[in-house]
Image 1 (cartoon, rainbow, N blue to C red):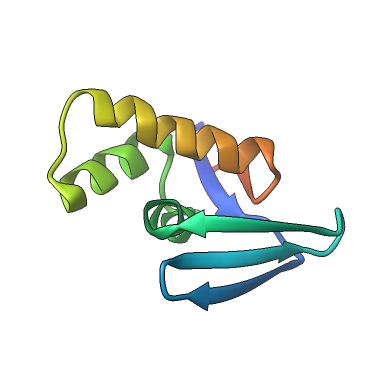
Image 2 (image 1 turned 135 degrees about the horizontal axis):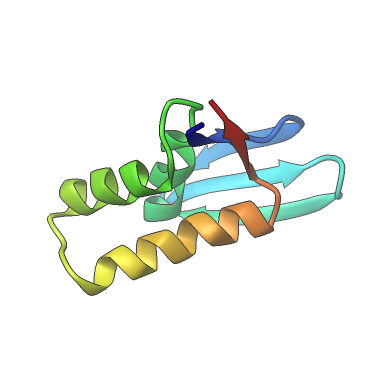
Length: 89
């Protein structure tokens, strides 16, 4: 089975000039996502896994090497904070 990432339910997502402000209703928490994190969040649509998301964001920003680790860290942070979830496809 393949693991894909999906956005969590119960999020109030508001676009701001430099990213997103997300209110997590269950946890009563507010999260600020910069532009890159907002793009990563949007790509968590149930169709892609971590590796695909990292590759797509790297290509969008035309970055190589160490950026992969930073993008993957962003994905892991979104997972840890409960903004995205990993599902079997």
